[in-house]
Image (cartoon, rainbow, N blue to C red):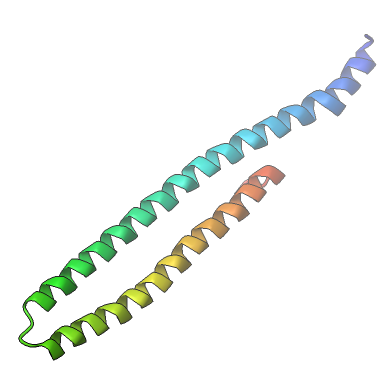
Length: 111
């Protein structure tokens, strides 16, 4: 193989394959990092939801009458619904950021 052929092979095959491999490795690393972030966020959210449910149960147990229990339950359901929407938005934003970051890594963006 002549030097020109070797250089052409390196330029056209070896270098692009190496760059693609590096991009795949970087994307895999980013996926792992983001997966951990999403998992931790979901655990935080589950902890918050559990704590708020127990707070509502304590309040209901200490209520003086049925109307107070109904108010506590209604307030909890409203607050939990709002919390669920916010939590879903947070997870969605993390997943979208992950997608953008991964595509950027695969393109070779340095950011």
